Length: 124
Image 1: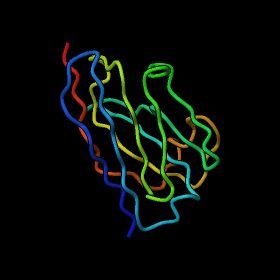
Image 2 (image 1 turned 180 degrees about the vertical axis):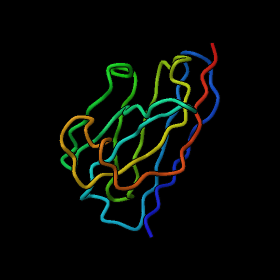
Image 3 (image 1 turned 90 degrees about the vertical axis):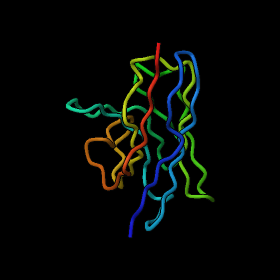
Image 4 (image 1 turned 90 degrees about the horizontal axis):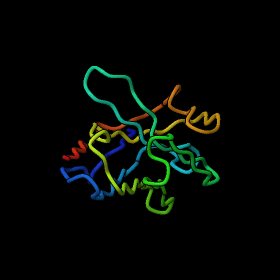
């Protein structure tokens, strides 16, 4: 059974930092592109960051220079380091996996798996 379990969300003030983690199990982790997307209630999903099977990373313009995506294949864990957080970063953050990468943030158009999400709230 495939599981993606996010953790690390919380409430911080603007300018603060959070580190999200995603523990994956039940599939061949290293064969999938991984990423983080965020979504607020009633709004469209926004791809935030992605990492390809070869370690190539991509970011949305809105988070470039502030967020860093990384993965540990030995631990089947994906991370998102978020620095200089802004109130507009407030959202539910989801970890996701796709067998078809497509380059950049395109994996978010054809996801195979995603988790239950972890809430990030940034106050001004």
